[in-house]
Length: 49
View 1: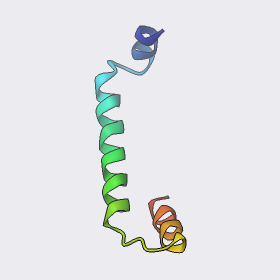
View 2: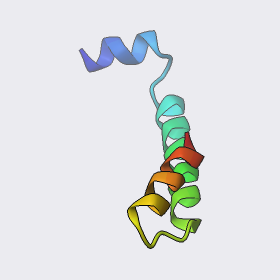
View 3: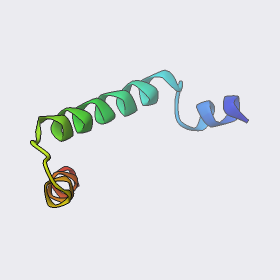
View 4: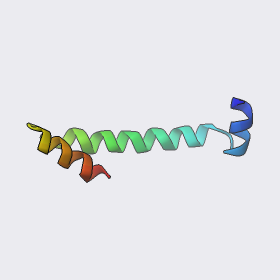
């Protein structure tokens, strides 16, 4: 199953690297925000989206 999915999505490695890049940038955006309350957390999540 994994091999067939890699076939449909290309070689597999570039898509994995792209997901890693996307999650890294989202993590950086989230951690740069100052979060002291639930409202701050909510605003940080909405800024990411």
